[in-house]
Length: 148
Length: 161
Image 1 (cartoon, chains in turn purple, cyan):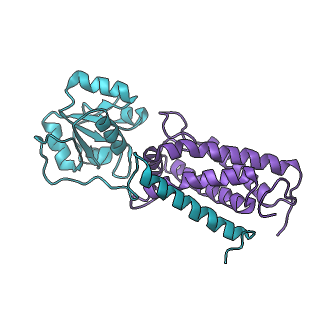
Image 2 (cartoon, helix red, strand yellow):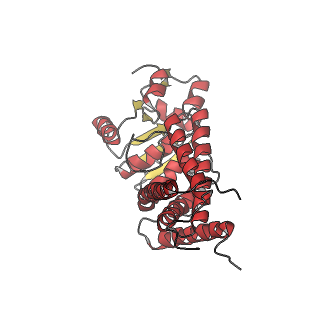
């Protein structure tokens, strides 16, 4: 595996990504029904599976965020962040392509008429995706607890 | 065996842990949701005398029947779509509190309401119907076919405000 990145950039990416994912998970964990509705609006999941995703995805975001910041299983957390962002970018793109105007459900699922999806949402997620790759392809393992 | 330093094993650990925590928390919390979302069922016949809150889906024919009886329609789509064309006399969507206020100016919470959006694939009508039910409305009918079925049938419609 090629390992390109080293130095403080990795730590910065870990803390920023970790913080963002923890923050993004909290409102969804608190309001699963609202988050399920937000997922349902994207019209990508069949058979009412939005509830299953609404119950598990926020915890995945929380765990990955905590792992990135604390330095536990950083490789796995970085892969999860990369995969989640690829899924988010796909879901938002297909919604935009079909011309459905919906709320993002990215950070808050309870505010009305706030955070609609758009090109800016995709660019933001691509930013997170790049940060995820920087963490995954890191050369030194500064401030990582486990595994050494 | 699990090797904690292998990224792919770490991924599995994350997935299993988040699934277990998600399911466990849903078991203990008071506002838990069903694992699989239930879809609204379409009813054969409409019982207007029910004392329980009603939230069901209706067909185009049933919607037209309600329309002919003068039942209030609510358009759950965004403003632009509403102005481009909507079911004649339908109320526009907006902020929920404002909508509730506007409906109550016309009728009581016990009277029937038909909610619709663009086409059978859109979820806005269902979402709005649940919100209105939470606001105390007793008889909510989601016309799943929405604007697409209504306009294809050339039933009465209007454009603008």
